[in-house]
Image (cartoon, rainbow, N blue to C red; front, side, top):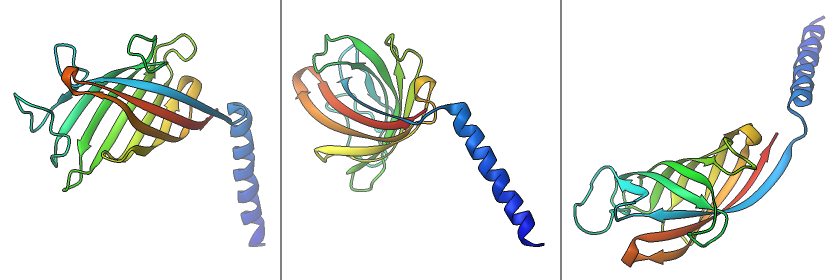
Length: 176
């Protein structure tokens, strides 16, 4: 008799899982490459330091406790004049005492026709001075509903004179 309630519970849970899968559709994998156009100075800066701000000189990326807010345009190609397809909006905090790790919280908000209004949510520890940094994709909305996966960031262009950095972001996600 004791096994009947357990069997019924398992059948009930399996039924819910199958019903949920049928409602959501088939799990898909999407891979894409995006380019964050990061401007850390000048009148049109897209990243600002919130704490530990210095009035003169470069931003303090390696100073423990520094907090930054960002609203970077994301383009479909390396060139800053290529079409904008999304915005990277969020915060990151230098969270390691030695300044080598940033904690990243970024929403990629798509503005292009194909994915307009859909989002991807990125979160994780990013070893900011490594050539390639990997963080988790922990969710998404719209065409990327229930997304999970990872993103890699690689700085591929750095022009200190005009405060411009291009970060290549490679994304692999599973979603419905």
